[in-house]
Length: 382
Image (cartoon, rainbow, N blue to C red; front, side):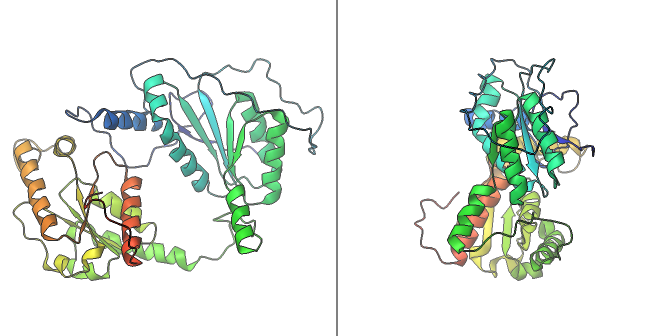
């Protein structure tokens, strides 16, 4: 039998038999935040746990999940003697989630990650560890059944996105047969869209080999190339060509946010705001509805800059005031006055927000403005 290659995203202490996957979210935690709200502190601690870090604390474990209600007997093309044996199986307090996809697994992985965000209180306050294991490129029933059997032995939840209806049916039947709790992420929404459009889905996984490269692929490549060339205020004469223009003081996340948006196909330029330096004239000539100002809490910004200064090995020489509170406040006030002078710029407070959260706000406002939606504005800041 083909050996399955398991790629794991460990949300707790690594275990024997699970291989760690490097966290590439690019997010950095900030330690020692004075005057930061308890909600932000909890969010940061939960994010650390979900990234694979262990907090120095212990807490009660969550109660075991209730078993699924009994299901009617079903038939599977399996050897009757090929039963799942739980004898000698390791009893684990860590809850496992198996993510199975016949494509890249991006959709299911991000759905699980978003859902886990609703349980930050559990990860932090009750110390309930969670492991997620990603199985991508599963395109035959034999491998799928082996994964389901392993999930049954470990008592894992199985979440799957299988575009091939036969594979999705096999996963559903195997999970029912072996009592594995499961969730089909792709099936219900695909059926709903098919019913709405009156056509049948293709049944092909996204990113399947042999498919021609689409226009959308080349559009995203072009957007990434444009965004890299426009990073940190480079080539301000090209700002008019950008879909989105970001501006803000140093360490407000302009570059990672730009790259994230570029990967979705948007040409993004970012312009830094530096105290004492004149802003490029072209920034005020572009459509103000595509300019987004980024701001942040001064205490959090100081801590980020201190960590940055230390990482770069900067001592008392050169930009010594970069991480000083007086300078941080003054620079944020300077940025605030600039935003006030340009009331059509949307201002987003990135304090405590992940890149994905900030990007969601930017894209919502961008498309609302593009399509001239008349949603009432509650506040100038988001």
